[in-house]
Length: 137
Image (tube, rainbow, N blue to C red):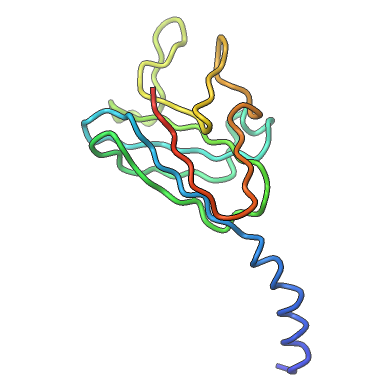
């Protein structure tokens, strides 16, 4: 490759690589029994409301806690929805009134009124590497 092209490519792509950040997530207050933890990440209010995530992970929850990392994220606002699948059916179970019966949580430990919180309540600003903790309820 031409040395000039190499320098130009590095100059153009360098800022993009530097803008990528990692979000480390620690989850606490889960059940003591080992269970899968489903985590979905959203970058917009529309996606948050409709369940269209930009990234998702399923990690083992052990002794009430778990850790995961979302890597290479551009700067922006992100919100997480999490739930523990205690019965292994792959979904967040609810009672007849629609209230969750399995442990769940949101980034910022956000809570909704008569339903889930808004994207704005759960959103975390990411401008560089960051760590957050989500407490399940």
